[in-house]
Length: 177
Image (cartoon, rainbow, N blue to C red; front, side):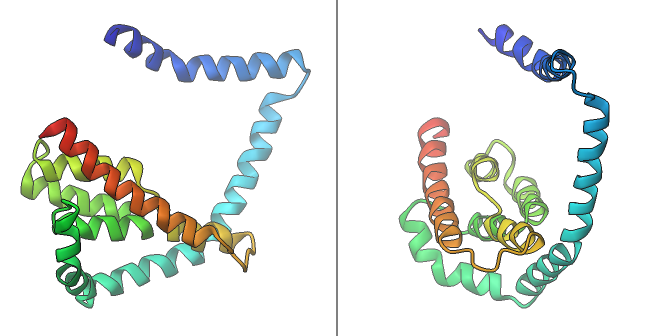
């Protein structure tokens, strides 16, 4: 079974590319030209989001450098301990909402400190894979396309992130402890 999954995962991307090219050829679509046009649009979008990205990274840096993250971690530790979330991992749960690269740095630090095969190492890896960069998406993508009223998106994203943290703790405890 493992060998079949490895084979399928190795072939997945080339097969998808082949299917796209063949479908384009059958429908007489100029695949290369469409790809180049999409790449141009992607570049334009990337340039539009740079100011929002810089603002988000500065805010994260200020939050961590001010000591607010350490204070928040200490203040909420009774609650995190009650659900089985180690206090060391809580900053990852917060920063993951804001920045993928910032949370990757935190996860790397956790794994260097506690080890990749520790409960904290496993938990931080699962949280990285199941947690979304909610505020990053709201600030950068909504901002770049001019969405001014996010309505239910922030609350829905925060709720999903909380569920993600709780389920990460439950699953890692069930699988690795």
